[in-house]
Image 1 (tube, rainbow, N blue to C red):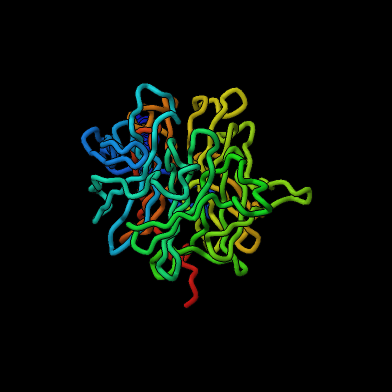
Image 2: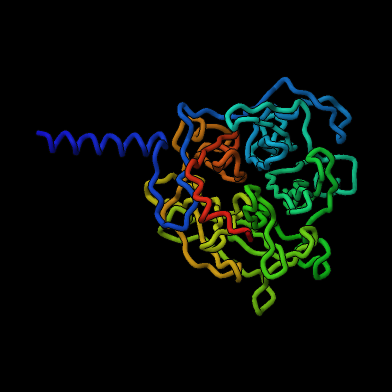
Amino acid sequence: MTNFKNIYLILLITLVSGVFGYAQELEKEWMLGPFERFEDAQPIIQKNGETEFKDPMTNRIINWESMATFNPAAIVKDGKIHVFYRAEEKLGEKEIGGHTSRIGLAISEDGEKYIQNNQPVFYPDEDDQKQYEWTGGTEDPRIVETTENTYILTYTQWNRTIPRLAVATSTDLENWEKHGPIFEEWKDGKYHNLETKSGAIVTQLKDDKLVAAKINGKYWMYFGVPHIWLASSEDLINWEPVEDYEGNLAPVLSPRPGYFDSWLVEAGPPPLLTKDGIVVLYNAGNSRNIGDQDLANRMYTGGQALFDSEEPWKLLDRADEEFIKPELPFEKSGQYVDGTTFIEGLVYFNDAWYLYYGTADSMVGVVKWENSEPEKIDISEP
């Protein structure tokens, strides 16, 4: 009887761990995590139909985050976590991509409570980027800091024709200079009219602070969907994509039939340089007929891949299972009915790691990794 009781308890603990995310086994030693949900986890940022903003495109007062708040970037400044999230203004009953997006800001002093600004901090304006940002907006941010304390924001410009990856810079997280689409000038705009998005710049933990990392004298960025491509830069503003010998974009990570990432892969938060290599957290879409039978069609989960720290295009290893997936009700309901844990923001704060994600294109969630293993992560020079 005792043996049966023990087996029952083990099964019960396993079931609870899987459903509520209180415990998680890592598949490979180089992976980041395990990330765990907070007890009684709830979304940390939600839509607000009351906040108002005078829109430069229409010159009207609008409810700029009345539809949804999701897909967050994050950075630590002045001892506080700053979460930059995509906020959609509801425009009738249009489908996904049919509303207008701006970027809002929420700030936390403890990693648990977040106070949202009443006004967006980044948005389509009466500026030299209006041809790329009107009227779809500014979407899906990622953010990194340089050793000179400049902040680099990558985001998607959406003019309702072509989504383009763009970059902006700031020294205070409030005032931003837009530099335009990243491939506008390269090779006479060869990739300027290609759909590009999701720019994740490689970072490194130095003295408890995440900063953009240089590898062989260059910065590197993983970007794109349904494959992940690679680009390099000397100044974090002007980027050069990695091509193959035929002069085409060279995928460095692609979907895999038979796995959770069988439909698409998309760059997640800024990758992290560790003693094992570059750990890339990425978003993965499932195609159930050729993918994971236990996941729904088009469900977004999170994967991890390891790239060489000297040759960022060289894939060394890849996890066979997702490390985060939609499990809680708020992760599986909203605009995106198939469910998402769309990871975009990663910070190191008070000796722990916080990973921010969008839920079903509707809200923002967060998970936490308490065991930071500094000997594995902080590889800065003594």
